[in-house]
Image 1 (cartoon, rainbow, N blue to C red):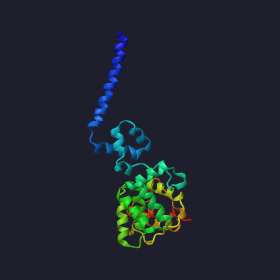
Image 2 (tube, helix red, strand yellow; image 1 turned 90 degrees about the vertical axis):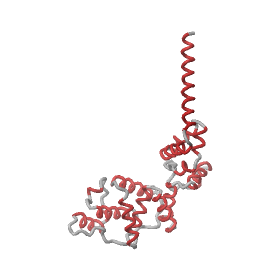
Image 3 (cartoon, rainbow, N blue to C red; image 1 turned 180 degrees about the horizontal axis):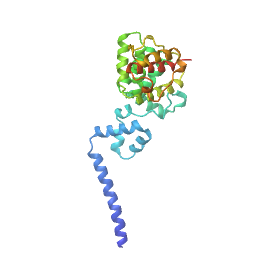
Image 4 (spheres, rainbow, N blue to C red; image 1 turned 180 degrees about the vertical axis):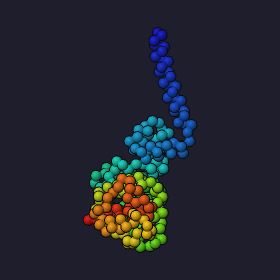
Length: 250
């Protein structure tokens, strides 16, 4: 009987802990639950599906537009083909798009600008995703602006690119964008309108080396640390522009 009492106490303690956990969840404002679930969704849709099964409060919060706006697209093809998407997936992607998911906006922008030749709408979507904080969009949009004939646009692109701060972030974006470009049919090849170097220093060691390499793009090396090539910020941007345009060479 004593053993049975210990067993019942253990069951009782588990029920108490479960009740206290549920009470804690109930006490949280919905806005906070939505924020938490948006973080989960941005990392893993599988984890979000698991969390939704925990309780009704999580399930309700998961249906907020903010969660769909931040949902990860990692499990979906970069350029999804309609005949390979089932109704459930199609409905989910539409909900994400309607909620303003920046990854979907970015992907549509890339396809429209570089493949479908919808230049204006594609650029606008890339701009929209960049303003939402989508890093790959920031990279592509800044590059396209710096390829413009307009000095004002080049200045905006330069400032946006410099705001990306670390070279590690830039390298990661470059690799991601290159992978995307290779997975689609490119009809719009990027050519830099203004070939003049951004760096005008007569004493900059990187400037002359970059000018020579830019004429022979096949020699351009993608360093894992961009500062290994260019210590000057302007030369760093010139170097990145050369690598970006190289993605579209046939």
